[in-house]
Length: 439
Image 1 (cartoon, rainbow, N blue to C red):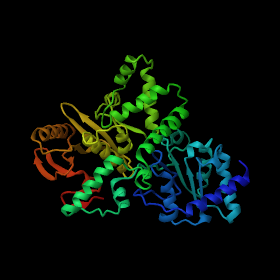
Image 2: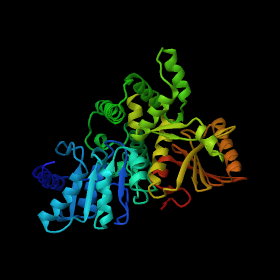
Image 3: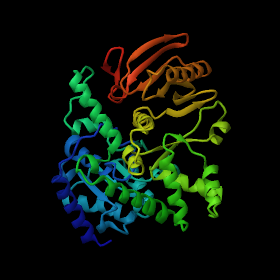
Image 4: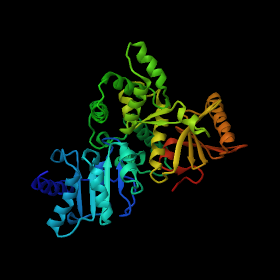
């Protein structure tokens, strides 16, 4: 890339960033030169603006202290490792000193980026932040060339707390009847429209946004990236994932469905396509808990989608899906918790009954979580609690939680206490025993 083009881009980018009004996000990342900090997540979830927020608000970085390169900007199409290294040299020439911070956005689009990043890291001179919409930043590229040098964080669409902050609704554990009604209304809207910033901040037309979003993820992040020719199959798989959210998804059943339509495709191909969609942070697959690693890996996974709005854009029965939308939202919040507790593992339990989430840290089960819209019905309550108690005995875990729409109580059982907590309180981090936010 010509030096003058790169120089002009670097100056213009800083001017562009200075003009932005950036909404604060809740993610806290480490500030260290000992590790590279990748920030990964779905497209349009706010990764770039999170980095802008670090520059403008959190760290208050001056122009002479940083470089920002977004490899999806047209000026940087075709950029490679040499351009990344060259930017640091140009900065030193302009300002008379090296930058302290280097931000490389959508880094997977730069050719041979690993070599440049490793070279910058090994000098020990820079705070290095990467971002990308491919989980390969977590696996192949980092595992092979940056092993042991990274602390990775994920950005998902807005959490409910961030959503309320934008709506300027005060989050507190004790609410008047009117305030609680408005809280539940906000939660209902959040479960319906989701947390993509473009929808929440800019009030774009949701139908158009989600249609274009699916095209972007499917065509750019999956079909183009992996050179897929069978477009019908990948679209069919996406529809199947959306229809099966918060439920078990069998590749075998999808295979049979395609076969009945005369579509020839192997199960291996379907598994590969599923992994591509997970790599693009479109869907997440949660395994069944088992003490046997082989049994867990071979289990039929439950599928969760990266945002409730995407689910609702493909379905018209919001009210009947409310319980599943609650479960999907709980999963996403657990994923956010993994930023602070990366050793935390999320799975589900199924034997005679089913428990929605088993939260483990190392060899220990920390918590069992059941999600249920209505728990007051005696038959429903018995079924849900029997599953929890069975799992509690099997996994030796007395920390049992039932997340509800608005039921709140604590009940004693032989295996320990079962806490019932409304979804809005759990999402905001409140414990119903003290009604204080948990750390």
